[in-house]
Length: 258
Length: 236
Image (cartoon, rainbow over all chains, first blue to last red):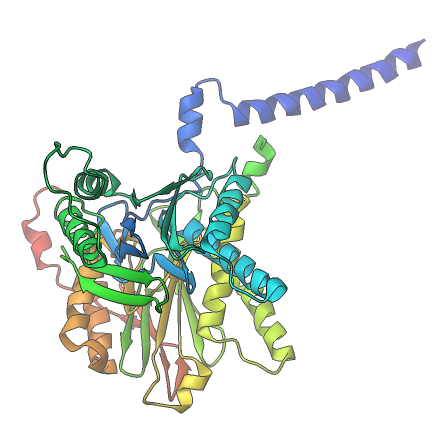
């Protein structure tokens, strides 16, 4: 009889110890004095924002893409004045991204390797429509730990027309005439809405046709305007021009550096 | 994620190094770090080098958690040995790419390497042709954000020095000599010493040169001008 109670006592003690340890773990993870919001705030944030803006405009037989080359830390400190945010994936696909630069690099690497594999398998370059769908799938694949990027894919499609595809961070896709993303997006979009979309122009006014030259000057204007007002946009415009049947042209234009 | 995991990840750095300052000159790169590792605000370990020679072409300097960098040194060493098996020396660009992927992968597992790395070096192929030789400085943050620069100050130095170093670099550009570059770095360290409370006055300047290869610096010391302290009334 006595030995039997002894065993239960030991069993009770080990059980109590285990419960005590469990309670200690729980209280360390969710201290009672901290609200869930405070715990959330203390958690390490895997994202950082490097600022900058990008924009793309498509026309009848061309697509132009531009981005600034500034990379900032906390919006107040310039890390570098010549960061690359535009990737020319092949002769008719251009990817431009803003947001978290680590994800931008990863996304570029993933797409490049997929395009490389496509070339290996099919002996031809991928078309921009296919790549647009591929990018959308790749973004949605990381639905619950997203690439924090505002991506724009531009290029010349199979019919020789300019194409711009705009994305949100989790892969929602839309083919548009023009698009912008990044810090100065709220400034560039209304300007292009007015100049290209003519959404606020009353009837009877002249609506100039969108030629390549006009698109380029609008692009320059929108970035110069953005650089005046938005602190994480500046230094240089990285301008990429794709025209049907012509090689891709890359230009760098100065912007304000303060 | 439960409580037990927290202690196995660097979500709070313990012993840390502060700024790294690096500058490209005509034929190479000079890198300045101070020689202290702090525990919070306390100068816990003195006479600790924060630079690591990978091989004759590559030098790495770090800011951030010291223990994580020790772990990285081990990983880098293994990578160097892997390249050796194919009779090759790892170059700065390759190592920069490798570490970018590594840090990004660790970030995605929510287990970051708490370091800001500065990879400095010269490519072996370019060393033979002095005309096209371009020195390399690559920076990687703990979240896997990587970029190349001509001049850099990390940590608190990013806020204090980036502009000062950039202005100096722009005066001469690519023609900056080694002595001039080192003078810029010494001046910069003096500025961090005044403004960054965990910066130290004992430092070293390492360099990677196209002809000499990696030369680790000797310990140096500056005092600075503290005459203004006499007029400061905020302290006893």
